Image (cartoon, rainbow, N blue to C red; front, top):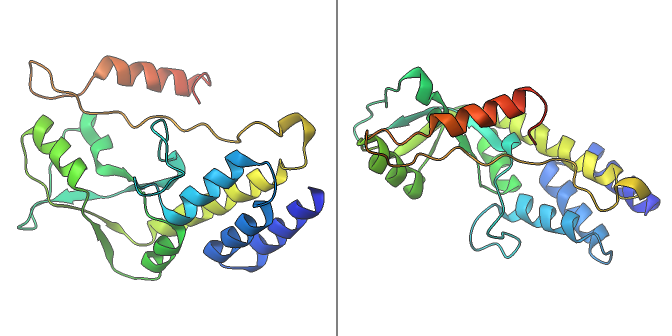
Length: 202
């Protein structure tokens, strides 16, 4: 396993990220590192329902978060109160190769997530059509994925950490309908933030 780790580390240092992850996937294909194989499939093919590696309890990792803004069909930007600023964050589901392609653009990236648009409409009563963010944000996302890949490769040969994952992703705080119309569970959000800031969260 030590030689496998060395091969993966070499690929990550020399190759584009998507190619390096493909190399890692081939290297671990014959091992029993099921969690690592599953993570590689998710990162390469994306966190979409069509990916067999996606399970009901899979959460898109926090390191895939970008900050942007929502717009309607007419180009009007969604204005939000500060307590709802998290709505202007999105965890990207796209595979690494697509993220690399988007990162090569110097323009704003525009994505349409029908489910998220419906959620915003149902809970905030406003119509949005797309989410836009600066392509430069993707450099940070890709760097975080590379760092995650390196961390996971480094524990392949470690007896103490063989069966552990290196990160635990938090669930995205959901908008929930309530009698007041704004569907944010502030108490739940406060508990999550307090737990995270005191080091008790994942």
